[in-house]
Image (cartoon, rainbow, N blue to C red):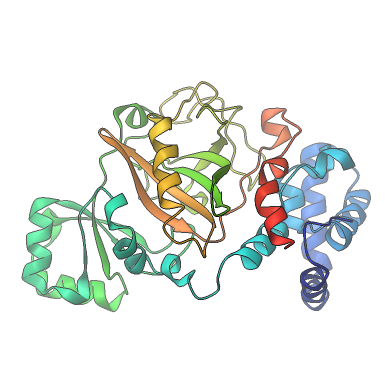
Length: 343
């Protein structure tokens, strides 16, 4: 049994699982895995229950990390959503994480790292919004609180005729944060010009050193966001900023050696200005020491990297053996935050 989750946290997790247990949902996962991986569904079903009960592995984790194809020892090298959630809860201050949950609060706190103009719609009238749009005719509107790319919208000033009505519409929809559209690095444009393709970097600040725990490059398909909910996918990134395998979505059987739209190589991808990306998140990670475990979304522009947001629950990104052939996860790199959570 894993020692990476406190007994009390595991008990709460198991109680939630028992009260919400839906055998049809688990069987649905098991059947899909059996079909995709050539396994026997009843055996997969039982194995999923065992790993959920004893090894901190949610059913979706089991599926997305291809546990049906891995040995027990290989599985234990992977992070799971329960372990990650426990670590975030254990080391991050419950009050100070609010600086990250609200995008407007985040923009104010991390203003020097943003590299773009923005405004709070509650602080300007229709004329102020119009003036902003004159400088950046294609602009982004966001709801202050949202995850997985939900609540992110793109607008063209040329299509707006009544700025008073438009401002009222945005406020009614809760789209209070208005941001300058990001111009990304030309190399990233070659992959997908219509979407800002961001890099997720998870860090842990132990009080003296910032540890880079994981990195993944996300790729869009032309939508306003590169998240999975908008059709995006990702590839894992090594300590040198290079892809170490084909991309995949994690949500279904998928493999992308090249970008499906542009044809650019995913396996040969390198994050532009990687050293500067690491330097940026290393500085940002020390800004709020009471929230030391963060997953940063970084966009790389022509002149350098800029922060999009920080997620105090960093998001689970792992390689997938059916897509990459790689059978080792990132748990070993998370040892600094795992050890801190035990104190």
